[in-house]
Image 1 (cartoon, rainbow, N blue to C red):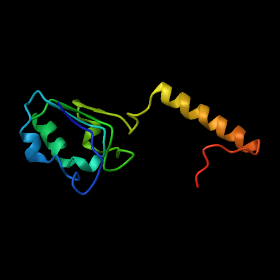
Image 2: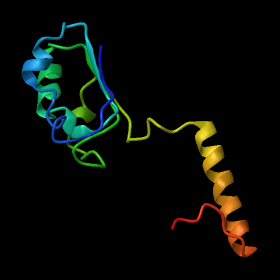
Image 3: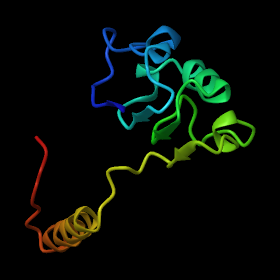
Length: 116
């Protein structure tokens, strides 16, 4: 399993290329939930088509939404999510609770979490 957990920068852009994926076993999986340009997008498509890796879990893409004709949509060994890997029930509960608190405080003339 190769899983990316990096910030996109000039040093990490294109970090994983075809030559890197060629070092993986045919039973290996690629997971990219960081930023799409960290992985050269053509490399996993080719590796998956050729059966050089077993599959991929992808939450980030070069183009969002993923185009209807993109190969990732038809490869049976790809699990693709629309850049929402961070979504959790607890995260949304806190997010919406804070929004309600923000609005109520603003309407009361006592705003909270004010940016300077």
